[in-house]
Image (cartoon, rainbow, N blue to C red; front, side, top):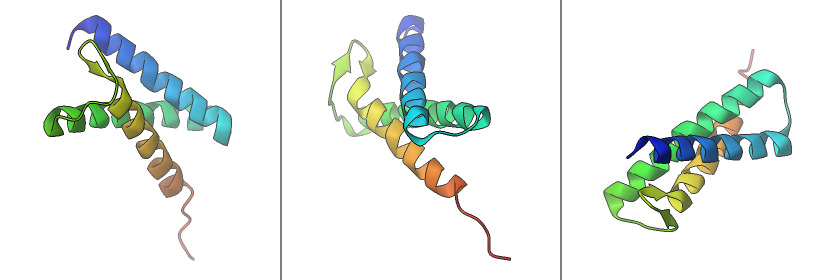
Length: 88
């Protein structure tokens, strides 16, 4: 993967995190948390796409469709796990 495609992938992952934050709300820490989760999810979606040979929406070397799906799956899972409170 080239540097421009890596930067474009980070931009798309950040955009997914910002969109999720605008829908769910929260503090600045949550925003950083969402952007980080989104980046990891986007990379995971890319890896699954390469490993399984799936292609949803390709832009050069970047598999945008699977990256966005992975991003939102990680965001939903992270949101659910972060809201969990232990019983006393």
